[in-house]
Length: 548
View (cartoon, rainbow, N blue to C red):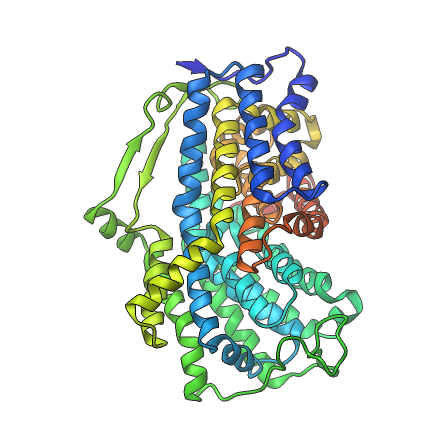
């Protein structure tokens, strides 16, 4: 048994600085020195291993096993999702269906701002609710790039949009995990998060369009932006508070898409923006959107692969289908030499807690498998034969090879920092802030997602710390556990894993530094706003944190 140590130098400032080295190496290499993502990930992994072994005293064989465990998790389920989404996108692009899809979106609106709003925010929220784990960014970034958005815009804006829905992603998985690790009531946590994030479901659509075209041109389309935000925020609040975390995003996304589509039949901007920002009016991007009847057979054919994808992703996301597929075959593989041999210690947890390390190998129930079946069905529908599908799949694997390596290394870093306790050191540094803790505790969630790439993983990592610290300071533990998840969603856009997903979906691999610089300000600013809201809920508006 090896017990984690959170202050190995008996100097919290020095220990925090050393614990931050892997993060600084990774983000510095990508953001400042424009190192290719897979090389930066390898450098970050080397730094994480060195800090874990030399500074924190974790046995070297345990560090190696943690890295291998993380890399395996990076490939399945996350890399598996990316590979198959890109496969589907390439199938539709090769047959020209994506060009038809592009023109059909003009039936909703020929305005680029409103296309962005519908795809990145509304449709992306549906995929987040049904699948999570990178699916919404992969799908919406691929769709935007096909619509003529620049790679930077398609990548960065998809990341910004994928924030407010994240806490209830994958049928509420982050909230369910948070309740499990904190011992707090699931419905209390769901309701509290549902009284934090709806404010940002209103803000993010405006923020998204502002990041795309600037404040003045955003104001030109404020009515539909408001409709999209309100029609998402209200169901998000109602379902999370009076039902639970499972269907929040799916219900809110469907209502938002329907309300926005209906509103756009009745309202048009005075000056539609059919060209991309900076492009001359006569050159409206890849192809000018043309209004088209939804009953047109070509339109139905173009939308069919994406409707099939939505159906398969939703089906694979339901607990009954997952359990049935796991019942056919799934393996839980204990990581011998790591499982049950690492112990979390107070004050990160209330009492010593043994960490499990069991890899779930579930290729049948993995979301990526549902996406693969959707791609195969769509491929046959579009006229591909078995050999054509195999050739396209082989080319897709070659296309995303570096992305898969990068994602595996990113998750290896996250698992090494988790099992060695270096990320807990960073969290403790933010927790020791006295009456400012509601603000900085929110940033712990942001940091956790930025490090791990997952709101679920951040909740598992820091949920116990949030409860212990808040009870010691006399702050509502439900409020701070919820703040971990709500603050975490704003870290999703800067985690290296999500950035690589976006660069792969837009075929802009190697430009991750540009994407990181584009989204970094937005991530920090929105996280600060969440922190200020939580401060208000803790001290100024206590009624907003009471469970109805």
